View 1: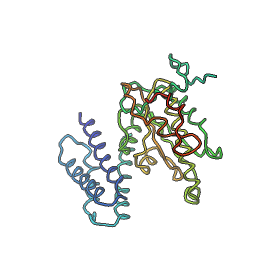
View 2: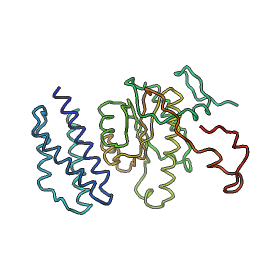
View 3: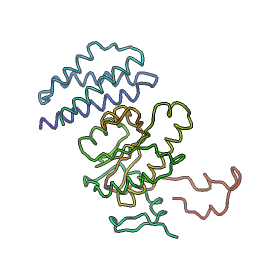
View 4: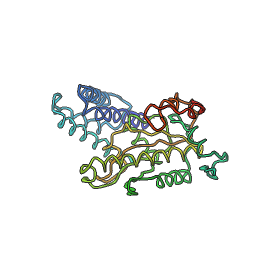
Amino acid sequence: MSEILDAHFFDYAFQVLNYAIEFVKAPGYSSLRFTDVLEKTVNLALQIEGIENKGFYEELRKKFVDRRVMSDQGTREAFLEELLTMFIEEWRKEG
Amino acid sequence: MEIVLSSSLNSSDMSLFDVIGSRRSVRSFTDEPVSDEELVKILDAARLAPSGGNQQRWKFVCVKNPRVLRMVKNCSPGFYGEATACIVAGIEGDAPAFSGTEYGSLVGVLDIGFAAENILLAAHALGLGGCAIASFNSSCVKKVVNAPENFRPTLIISLGHPDRQPPAPKKKSLSDVAYLDEWGNAWEKQESVPNE
């Protein structure tokens, strides 16, 4: 059960990250808002009892601590790319 | 001469025009996996597509491992349905080939379009279904399938056994989109073609 919850939560968080990346070059705040949702999702993961892989979400949370919300597009892109790499490395560990 | 695309894997023989006419974009699948034999046939159909200058700069990554497929889906917002396989189709080349001339770049993308159509038609001829997906995070897909830096994923084609045949989408009539000799010149022969 917990494994399934972990996998579903991981997929959900990763999909949100990809939505943020999808809009990173678009004008407006879509990418920023999706990044906000991702941050909230990560914080939520730390509070959900059934999620076992808290270490990964803690690492992600630390990345958000230093995040500058209103940064330029290049900085936002690099930040999201860094998170993407973390997700993929985590997925590879599972395998 | 009748051209038949169907394979021995499929009991129903469909002519090329039947296949073209009845193909649909499928976004809803059963959990029955696509067989290796079917995937190889589909990939071979992609390989045989035309390409600009016969350069064949394409590469196709066939994804059937559920673990990898799940991640490809995760980084593809336009990927709908629980397909049991997919093909990541893209262009391989050094950076200057993409940025040097727009022509080269456009032709590469068109080549993937030709290959994607072959994939979709071959899949349909085998009784499978799929959908071409352009909305995906290219950098993510590259990382997931371990592709080199000079690979540019252009389309993902989902594949699986359709759980239903989608209805035919409304298409413009032939006389709305095709003219004879001059722009806007109607051709009465086209009127006999059913609009479906």
